[in-house]
Length: 194
Image (cartoon, rainbow, N blue to C red; front, side):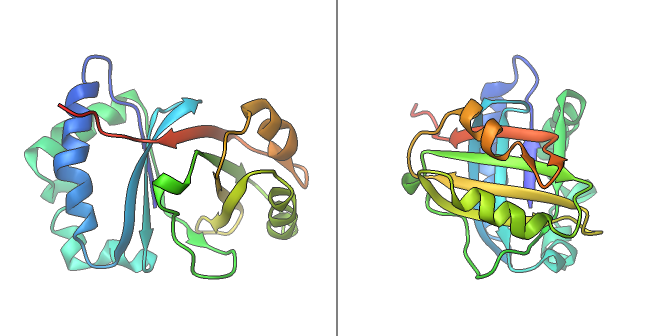
């Protein structure tokens, strides 16, 4: 699951406090949430990204999750989520279709992350995307996800070293005739001390 949000101007510090001290730790403690980490956009919009590796999408129907989500969220969560919804928020639930059971790499091992959405892709998209991303230098891991319905794909490509946005756009901005409509480059989020 991806949570992509834009804190409104003047709310960034509180947004980060909420994410660091309440929201992310709460999600990390839920059954079926295997990883939870944050990223900051260096090229693109919205700026804030959280990636949650789940045991399965059915975790989002679990009573433990429902007890802390939506109307059951804390007052702080409801207030901030309402404000980010107006400023820009995307939630993506998708199943990983690439082989293996890899999770997000530890952020200390990742220099940058490309998140790309390819809507309306045909049946040959997945093998073409896997092949094209495999040619990229400094690629540490590439995972491909399909949204329900199977015609929208999301790619999470983690890089061990710096890569140029324009280089990525030229190499993988369009795959098998499907152009990315969301194409953001992120750096690992580091909470500020103090």
